[in-house]
Length: 143
Image 1 (cartoon, rainbow, N blue to C red):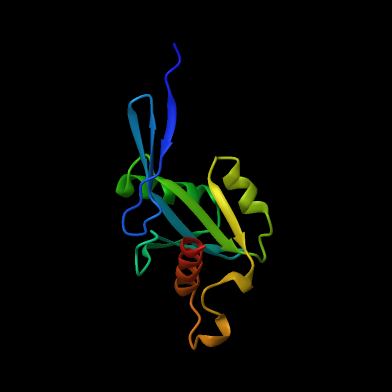
Image 2 (cartoon, rainbow, N blue to C red; image 1 turned 90 degrees about the vertical axis):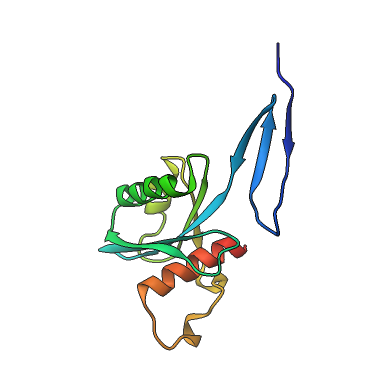
């Protein structure tokens, strides 16, 4: 016997969180946006949710997709197993390599054009990898 399947969208003060009801069982999903400032030698990572004013859980790590996967595993311990992650980085030196590596592990990834950033770099006085990662995470959350 097939169970009925239907979707139910729930919002909470503008959150982009939603839940799906399938045959009487609820699965809750919340979305966490992971900004990645990527360089040839290192990645700077941070996370934020749509409703957060600031990013959190900053981490600088050697440049490897495996370290991104470890970071996401760490975030799952905080946000829960049913969390949806959207990772993003600015187009640049890595091209599509990191994108393809993460997609192979079913990690949603976006490559952002510099013009899609919420804050233009020319307007900032001090440029840091941490700030760049946060701008990427916030840009993902706002799109």
